[in-house]
Image 1 (cartoon, helix red, strand yellow):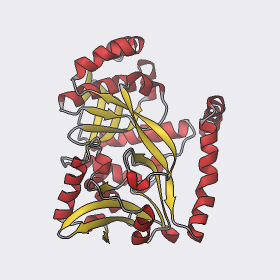
Image 2 (cartoon, rainbow, N blue to C red):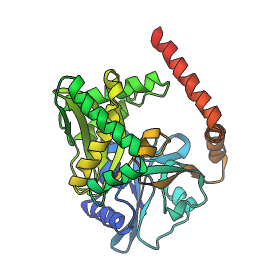
Image 3 (cartoon, rainbow, N blue to C red):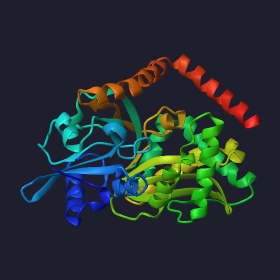
Image 4 (cartoon, rainbow, N blue to C red):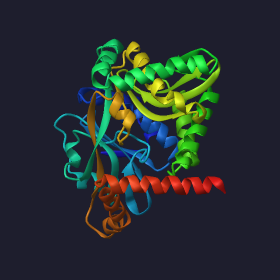
Length: 358
């Protein structure tokens, strides 16, 4: 095994990573590609990749970030929607031996993909990640919605028609918008949404903003940034930025202009994204973990992702447990009680409103 910065991977290693990933049979999530690891490394200097070699062949890759006291995290932790190792079939190192080779006291994850045997038993909680299957084409998906969510589809399409009539312009959709100004608008909307709902503003962190801008410019078969925008005339009213591979669009940052909220432009946007993705040969849209009514209405199925940590015995592992587990257990307690969770959201919204009124 050798440990390198993602930018130090050789061309042969990058190609081996892609080939191994393709052989797993897992959905081709762009967050699991070497290009994403390299993009994160450009803004997170502590990013590393452990590479297994057998004879003359690279047979495994484990991307991670190494923090103080050897505390490790999944690469892109906090924004990456799919995490884990990329290994040749049958290669199953001990998780603790892996950490020892990497000089890590522990490794934390919040979106570990299903089918990661090295980390079996390390997960403390699982989450549904809703998906939209458009593999049979958009008409087949819309036909399913007419049965599964008839009121949702009927209402959303009617709002799309009213948007054009009442907003005074042609409603048009761009699947892959390259204008950086549109990306800036999306990030402004999303920051305002985070503040309005009392959530942590991800775009207040320079590394996330820079990462998104870099990914918007990235064009590779396994990982490309896609900015989708719904316009009325020349005015953007909803937008989404995500990552795509040849077959998967990983949904990431959706937002809309609150001035047009009564038209549900975000829902209209997602329908047009599904239509355009199917036309581009993409078979799945991964909506990401987290409960939301719009996801329930749009989804055709679910994947499973996991949260947890694997640790080596010792003082540093104990410090990790004290720093993370009490908070994690509290959040799990609240999520398991919908009424309490709803009250928590209400409090967050009130606090955000008070901050905004100052």
